Image 1: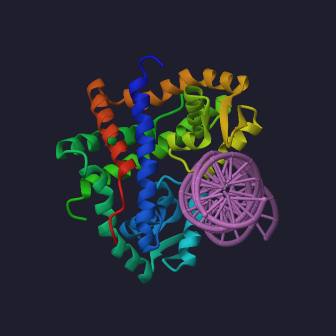
Image 2: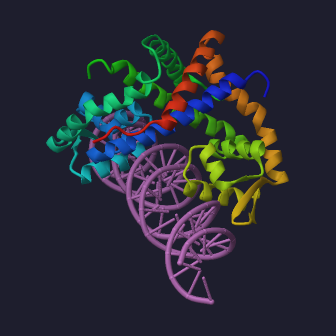
Length: 147
Length: 147
DNA sequence: AGTTATCACTTTACCACGCAAGTGATACTT
DNA sequence: AAGTATCACTTGCGTGGTAAAGTGATAACT
């Protein structure tokens, strides 16, 4: 427990913060009948449609299996459409899905950023953003140390 | 999507980073036959034992239900003990659990902090730590905005 | 043409988690 | 003493995640 304390503590706090804020976001999004995960996926579809499932999975850091089920649920609720297209399926929003996401987006973005804006200065947010960018990129490339 | 962009982007990156690093941690901890969640709980037990389930749940940001199931599994695997004690159950590590956690702790702490130390300066880590402390505290107290 | 490979997606089985209803022991109230 | 409240924990059900095996359509090899 020597000198790794600071990194470890930071890691733990970040974990707690994300689960906590994720839960609050879920609670918040109930008023739009969405979960955070669904919101995330819908936003990506809106931005990148038409897009295939595997590309989508890659974008939101989920396995293909998870994406498959998630989209099945969203389709059942009539928020998205899947069209077989060559051998891939192309995903797009239905008008209902579009309405949902448009209704939810402004408040959700506002809510998300309030976590930061309510306690950090603009300065701090900026350096946090820079740090997170580095960290995220790094974690994508990171390999496990050998046994 | 106006001026909340920075907060939102930060939020998204942080989410991606935590799920990513959590996955890697899980993979890493496989060599000790543990998951990140279990490691987290065991550490807390070691530090605070004897402790009740609800206190434990509070510490790791999990509901009582989740904690109940998690501990049931850990008990089945012989890593912890639960003793009915008045009306509460007192949790403690078995010697097997103690061994496990002691074996895993140094490398896991090292691994966790490597996420930060490999890309940020000591300076940056320190301000990140400060920021996360504020954010975590705030998120615990935060209430949903009224409808 | 017939086998084999590959690719995109699905399905299954498992773990982790939340919420909310249920349980069982203790304490409080009258 | 009977009834109620409370507290700590458990359980049922749904979501969301992984890993790995399965499916079905297209391409590639001989």
